[in-house]
Length: 257
Ligand SMILES: [Zn+2]
Ligand SMILES: [Zn+2]
Image (cartoon, rainbow, N blue to C red; front, side, top):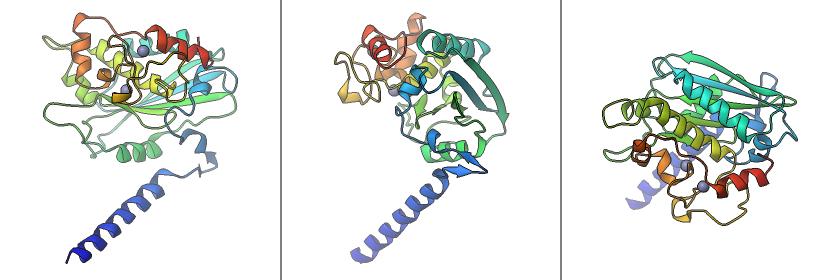
């Protein structure tokens, strides 16, 4: 009996793996080469930071109806890019609304599959592209007392769980919507920039190895608490956390400023 159930389990896993491979990896579709935008998080850190391969950045923000980012959040994001990245060709942002997807709560595979459906901009000559998805539901890994606010899942894409962000901001005793949105957006973007030890080598050791690719400084934007419920407490004082000197040094050493 045990043998039979084991065989069944293997079969189910094999199908799940081949499904996710089928839907996720289509390097070329309709003449567009998607492969340079389907790498692992951190693998394009230098492409973001330096002007060597790409002089311009184009950001495509997809939001589910009613989950559009505040205009000030996008301004804050652009200001951060201008301050840290070498992109003399400019920073372009476009936004597009989509209908509710029906997938919430989301797995990362579902988020990646939706990117294949929605994303229209891919790297092209001197243009580096970034895709951001503002989700209408939570992450499927959320529990009653822990939740995820955002996840960087490829080299040029991240998701903001905007529904969770909205439920935890703007009310009494909560951080402002703009401050929480900006903090999570910058944190996830900095993973794409290779922080911490994720594509931008550390100048000085400062990785909080117990919490993955994060910074050991409790007040730093790249502290592990920032992408989960800890952010709400960190922001209670009213200021958006900044990168500390160790994180800034890593970006500079990998072609940023
Ligand atoms: Zn993080
Ligand atoms: Zn740091």
